[in-house]
Image 1 (spheres, helix red, strand yellow):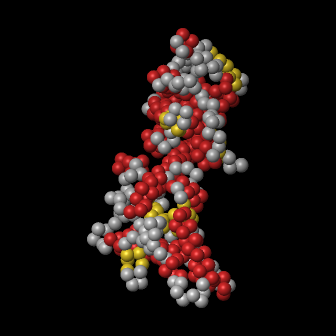
Image 2 (cartoon, helix red, strand yellow):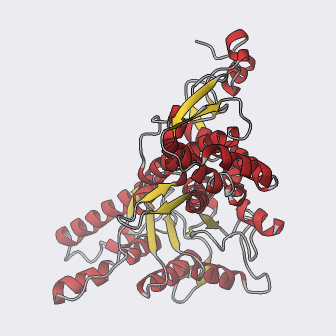
Image 3 (cartoon, one colour):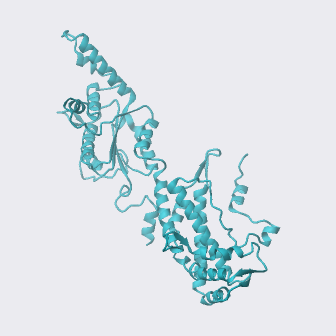
Length: 450
């Protein structure tokens, strides 16, 4: 059980490699001229929650007994997405006749998989200066052909495909770009009114930002994928807990929190401890009903995933003013949720282990007589009911907030108004010394410059 829980909490532990439970991306390119870019792209994609397959890194999953080319081809088949980067170099050759580079062969396999529906998306990026050279030479070829069509001494192809310090094999690189752009297929489709080829979109780039801008749009990345995954895990646990704290109204199907039966009773309790108070018996009966249900079900609640999310730090907020991470509202909501669940579990444990206390509580709250009853705020038999009510209320409000901000991008600053940690708003300590909060301590030890 502990091992399974750890595997859920730690996304780096997998039964069959680190790529099995996340969308995987294969990045294809010549390595020497793209080393820094590939490294940056790997880091960014992994931060977004993707598994990245790059053969030059030690975490590249492969069968070492296979041929290195075949291992790379198989890796493409195991991925969801394929990224191709085209620059100025050809790289190693897969075959000499016909001349096919390893990168080109990887693309051909990816293109086939995409057309078979086995690859979700295929992205092609060409360095902007290489694209400019391609377009310039295309224009030059047209000019030479149009102007010197009868001059046999003009070798158009030699002029157009000459190598330079910007591109070492212009003929191959331009041909490769035309292949991924499916130029010949497009010309045939237009002439014969046939179906046009898919996966022929080419993106040009000059900077790393150009690439990630495309990927963010195409992969619908609005935020860190780890944030999304942890958010879903947390909400699943929150939803399971809510099933224990609510019931469904048979008339309209609405969720009704159990604490709602004790709402009027809780409102009648003075905000300051000490002394007695009166409450209508119909409200005390509602509190008795809640006491038998709400106080006893807390032991079944769980907060393992919530604790895991807190420890992961994925919901910490970055404060650009101080160049530091801090506890934002989502992290705060998770901490409050965990504290209230643990408090309710303790109350339930105490009540379940002390039937006499439950009996005494029912005797004092439940009655068939109309009118009012008088109760004491210091009565230890009803204090657990009040404390359980506050925990239920806070868990409900925090659940609504977490669903709203994680699923529906609700205003994160609209943090719910919670019941205080103590049953009563004020104590002697508050009046004499003042009650400390975690924020007070943190701000004292880590003062912020104004």
